[in-house]
Image 1: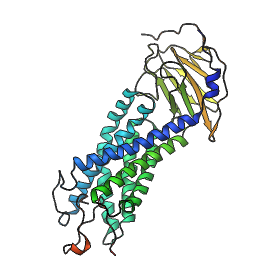
Image 2 (image 1 turned 90 degrees about the vertical axis):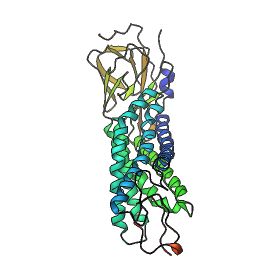
Image 3 (image 1 turned 135 degrees about the vertical axis):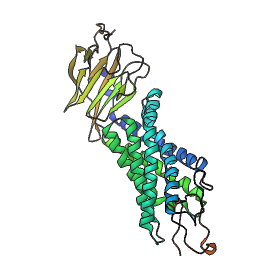
Image 4 (image 1 turned 120 degrees about the vertical axis):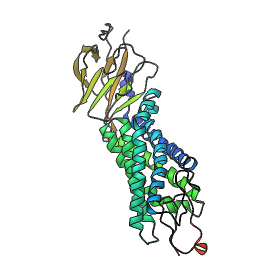
Length: 366
């Protein structure tokens, strides 16, 4: 039975793909911030450190670096797992979310420990004997955000998204660190950390999403099946399409599609499509081929699954309507600083200065 794509081609719009990326990443960042706060507060127990035990006034620099490394590790794990799962959420693919999460988890643990240790050391050095906490905290949180973003990007297995996550994490960390004390007000240390961490997570997700949108030109939209309307953004120059959970475009529930079925390479006006070894031919605008060019607005049929190609240029829609009929010919089957205690009010401070801790919302002396 023929499949008329004329109405589909006219309705496709990259703005929906862009909005989806931005919305899902922002929400994932906020959710990850809540998760990171919960992990760091409950497991690490900031008001009585689980892994290290020293009074704020007696902690050595090494103690604070180790405590901060563990504290930030829990935050980055909470943030990173939510952000890593976002791609599968957007594509309605639970298995892809699981794969991204398991891929990124080791990097999140190691990256969080390293980021926390570096940030605390830089915070102490920059702060010195000053009471101006804003700039040191801003720089330190920016470092954590950037390194945490790299760890998140590893889970996506995409060079473009790795860059976007690193830059987005850096931007979110810098702004979140800058506003950390200002937004915390005179509340408790725990409330201050909650506001700060959730804000940083939300900003990380927002910036990552904005960079992802800015990097978007081509996308594929499912035009058949139960998941019709699902969009796959093509971030990299070369993307693989198949049924594997590790490829850029994962097509499920089609027995005629192998794990890595098609290699799609971006060109000036479309995608160069090449069938992988052992893959059955595809249909491009109804014509069976092993290699061909899929124009913007064109139809690509792999197995029984039909995809339409859309493109965004300058924020405007550039998807001409197409009037293609898919072939009825059968497809060939494939061959077989102690963050955790709030410093006493200035009037009650004991002699001597507590070591500076990046996790504490401190105010300059009046």
